[in-house]
Image (tube, rainbow, N blue to C red; front, side, top):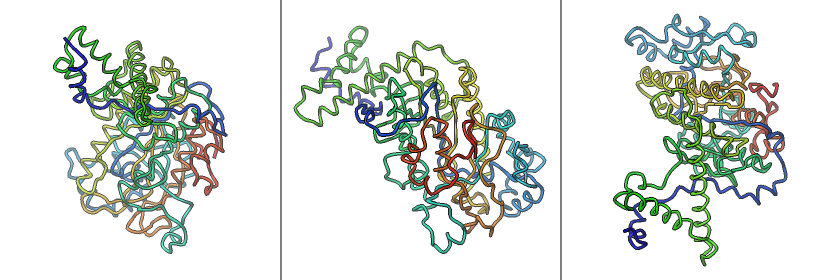
Amino acid sequence: MLNRRHFLKNIGASGAVSFAAGTGILSALGNANAYAADVGGYKALVCLFFRGGQDSFDTVLPYDQTSYDTFSQLRPGLFSNYAGQNGGSSRDRSRLLALNPTNAADLGSRQFALPEALSPLKNLFDSGDAAILGNVGPLIEPISREEYQSKSKPRPNRLFSHNDQQSTWVSSSTEGETIGWGGKLADAINASNANVNPAFSAVSASGRSTFLSGQFTQPYALSSGGPVQVNGLKNRRSALLGTGSENDKAIQMLEDHYRASGAQRPNLFERDIASISDKAFTSNNQYRSALESATELTTEFPNNSLGRQLRDVASSINVKDALGMSRQVFFATMGGFDTHDNQATNLANRHTQYAEAIAAFHAATVEMGIQNDVTLFTASDFGRTLIDNGDGTDHGWGAHHFIVGGGVQGNAIYGEMPEYNVDTETDAGKGRLIPTTSVEQYAATLGKWFGLSDPELLSALPALSNFTTRDLGFMANGTV
């Protein structure tokens, strides 16, 4: 027989309830001065972050003969390693998948290609559902090679550091920052009362996320297959809480304990915790109920970490109507891109995994009929050096990224594609390329499509005011 004493004795083993369900301080949001320009219909942004610093120059490769030859000479070790692969080199020019962008004239005589492992992304590019943004990275303001070397203009702090540049990419500040621009976008949208349930405005499929944290928005955390549950209940119910009807009673008692009428608690901190607990349980129950009543998606996803994350994001989008959502921001991650060594094997494997996962995710949006309303974009710590170290590459700065979705002005390469060579106007030294497009410009283009007004974008991205072009043109709502 379950009793309160037995219940309280064992409650510690259940772990802490997830507080990441989004507290959404509606009264504060309602007092915001600016309102989103457009919150009609539904739109979602999905940030896919490549942890470790993807070598985007070994991802979007030079294809015209002159550039290809120069690049191969900068990377003799890597090209030799690729040549030693079973079946021959995947970087042999004859095996690369040449891109034929609609704006090829903007590139002059230069051409680019993707490796065979990215064939699913090549198909999306060709169909107009994917675009490439060239040489983007953290900047405070535009900076030339001379200005960088003379230190006459400010540069982002702690360049080439993993933790700091991961943070700078998502928050415009180094490690320790707690608010990201994805969360700021959600703050602005919620100020216009776009969502019935603000708790689901920012959803992470990859645990805690600075990117999704705003002033008023906290990410709702998903575990594989659904919302985060109270630890221990699923696998230890019988031992801790009994079985059958006793189990159901135990779960209700657990919720009652965590919800614990905050108004009756004398301590302000306790009341806050009780309030957050109540919101967490309410959100989890709402989310679980929506999933259980939804028609299951039939699109198959790869059975790996990223495939499962993007499957969960798709499942979350699939219940948007049941949850009353108009705008959502999502976050997923993939690790293993710090390829100082064994790059020829490791990067190719990751290319295969993420290309297949992204293609499956896009197919799921097509299945839901909302492919024009969902945009996935990639980010990473930094690019890597144009010069190899014999077996891999080292930390760089500027990098190329993919944007995928039906709302993308696809089959095009945006931004300024740098020369794949050293001692050029974009070479900061050692083959580290100075970005010619800022993260703020990247984010602002996405944010405008998402529905934010110009004042809101400037508030969310303060350094944006230092750049003349604020819409890069890769989304269907704007022009360069």
